[in-house]
Image (tube, rainbow, N blue to C red; front, side, top):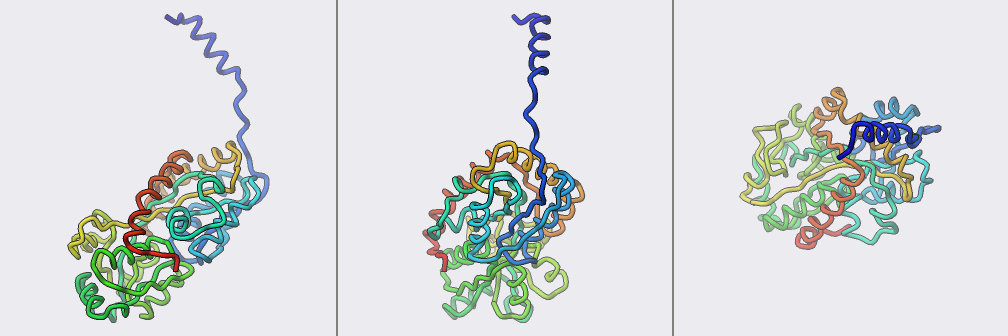
Length: 321
């Protein structure tokens, strides 16, 4: 049994141990986004960057590095100095899909440092309003009638929009053409003008256009209907495709070998930003739900997502082309 005196002495001993000095950045911090401005990753990063700037005490510069489905930003981050001044907002494409579909010059889990998840993303399957399809079965019927004719756009190879279309092809027994863009902003420009027939895109990029009547929402690729559009069915229920689901999320990563004090400091600031009511509300307006985590939880999540998607990608025949 521990006496009160012994416990008190132990407590004083704990107090007497000096706390590890908290890392404080001394230079501006840049956060790389692997896609062009205007997409969901870009919107997320810019929404939280002002709060991060206040919490970390240094200017935050959001730098767009579009190309190769986010791989250019990932490689630049992996090779950056491990001093906390270069970070990256990773996506399911750059952290899970691309490593499965193609050989990369870096390893996500050893050449990047997990910091924390940021958001879960609502995606919506949309078509231009001049297309005749009023439901997902209408779209599927048109694709069956004209194989290899209808096109779907995505914000990049390996992203949720790409895999969502490939999975729809596989499960519905249709053949459509994938058109990858260098970000959500460029994709939306072309789907608004009718250059592609449909897209599974982030709510951040399509919701304003749905509300204005410039795009038509046919379904959401989630297990349940979205509160953003409760009248829009899921892909599974609309097309009788049980098990169809495509999740989307973003996460903060750092360079290889990022010291633990920096990881802990940035993770704490990121999680505090994601608990801010104004930021939560701002994200929600774009179909983005704050989803903070520890670095260890993010690492485990990336591993689990990789194991989940590997057989699905193989079955769908999706490639990095």
